[in-house]
Length: 170
Image (cartoon, rainbow, N blue to C red; front, side, top):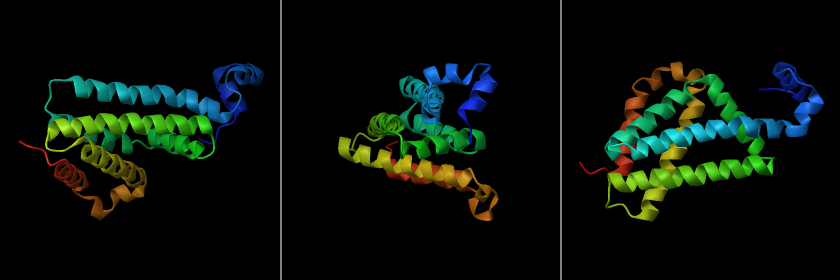
C-alpha cells in the first residue's frame, strides 16, 4: 500500500501528469479505488436485505461475509489504508462517514426486522455494536492472531453473541 503516483502511472501505462490530471493526490487515487469496493459491499448488503431470506439468515450471511473479508489480507490492507487516509483527508473522511451512516441504518433496519420488539434507537445502537465488533474482528483475523488457540471456535461465538444482541424472535 505504500504506493506513489509515479508507480500507479507506470502500472497504468500513462504519464504521471495524465494521472495527476484526474487524481492529483494519493488520497484521490485511494478514493477512486475504494468507491467501487464500498459500492460492491452495499450492493451485496442490498441484495441480502431484498432477498426472501429470514432476517436471521441475512444477519448470518452478513456476518459470514464480513469474517471471510477479514481473512483476506490484501482486501483488509486496502481498508486499513483507506481509514488511515480518512484521518487526514476530508473527502476520505466523508466517504467513511457516509459508509458507516448507511451501513448502520441498513443493519438497524435488519435488526428491527429480526426482532420487532427492538425500537429504532435500540436497533441502531445494536447495529453500531455489531459493526464495531466486525471492525475489531478485522484487526484480529488480519494478523497472525487468527492462528492462536484462543481463536478456535471464534466464528461460532461471534454468531452467538450477534444473535444474543439482536435478540431475534424465532
